[in-house]
Structure formats: structure tokens, C-alpha cells
Image (cartoon, rainbow, N blue to C red; front, top):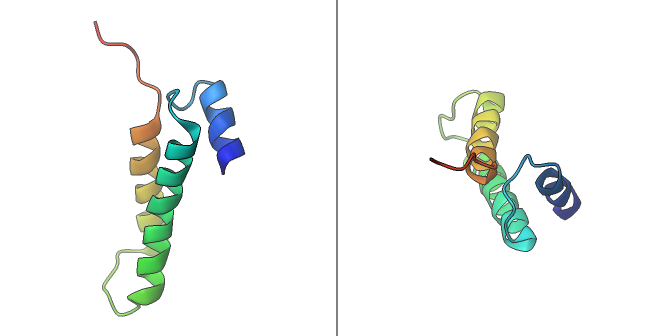
Length: 70
């Protein structure tokens, strides 16, 4: 994951930030989702793929490089 995050930062897809913190934050978010899906099988989750895709969108949007404001 660190390598993928570093490459995404290098290529300008993610904002330059502390590599370890960013990697661990993304991992923690996905781990939390995974833990909930496993530990709460009776919870009325929305369709699994849609939920996972949305979480990834939210996590990556937060880490994405933004244009400087005027």
C-alpha cells in the first residue's frame, strides 16, 4: 500500500503528505469497513460493492491533490 500511495503522490494523483500517515489512514478506513462487514452480518447494509466503492471514493477524494485556490 505504501508503494501505491507513494506512486500516486509522485504522479500527482494524491496530495503530497506524510506517506506513512496517508497509507495508514487509507488502510484503517478499509479495515474498518471489512471488520464491519464481517462482524455485523445481520446489519442491513446497502449492496456490498456499492458500499465499498463509495467508501473508496470518500477516502481517496480526501487524499486527492487539490488545485490551489485563488
